[in-house]
Structures are given as structure tokens and as C-alpha cells.
Amino acid sequence: MIKNTFSTSAFDGQVVLLTGGAQGIGLAIVEAFAQLGAKVIIADLQLNRAIDAAKLLTEQSLKVQAKACDCAQLEQINSLVTEIEHEYQRLDIVVH
Image 1: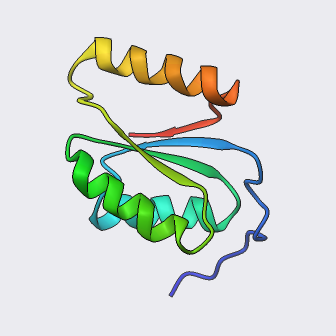
Image 2: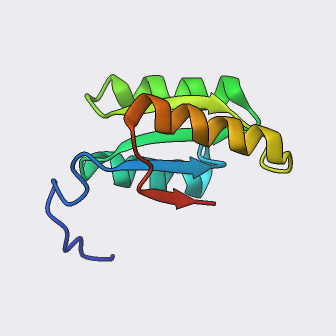
Image 3: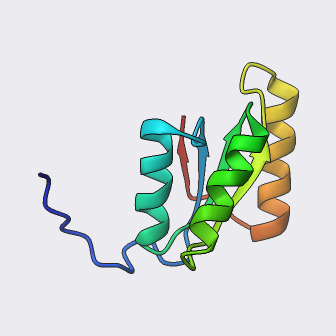
């Protein structure tokens, strides 16, 4: 088991965009960032799964939202980043 050396506020206020975060390892990364205080956006082709994952985590008082994005489409990536920057005025971390 890996010991967590970060405090629960290590990423307070930071905005994290994670692609493919609706399930599996991606979802575990989403949860870890959210537990450390980040606002996390799950960008996934499977929007329904991303919504379900975000709902589960927000019920635990974590800051997570879901967005549809096909990362093979440059227009969708640009649109999503613009939307995030408009909503949060920042984007600190991208995990792709």
C-alpha cells in the first residue's frame, strides 16, 4: 500500500481536468484529487457513466462534475477547456 503524504488540502481550489475518468483507474484518480481538495472535471465519451461517477462522489461532498468530450476531436477539447476557464477562471492540472 502506498502511503499518502499529502494533506487533505494539498490541492485546495485547484481545477483538475481528467479524461477517461468515468471508471477504473481514471475514476480512482478523480476520487484521489477530489479528496485532496481539488475541483475535478471528468471528461469522458461515456457521459452517462461520467455523470453517475460524479453524482456518487458529490454525494460524498466532493467537488466533481461530468462533461462529454471526445479527445480525438480537437474542437471538443478546445471547447471544453474554454468552458472550464470561463467557469473557474483557471485550469491547473490535466490528466490525459
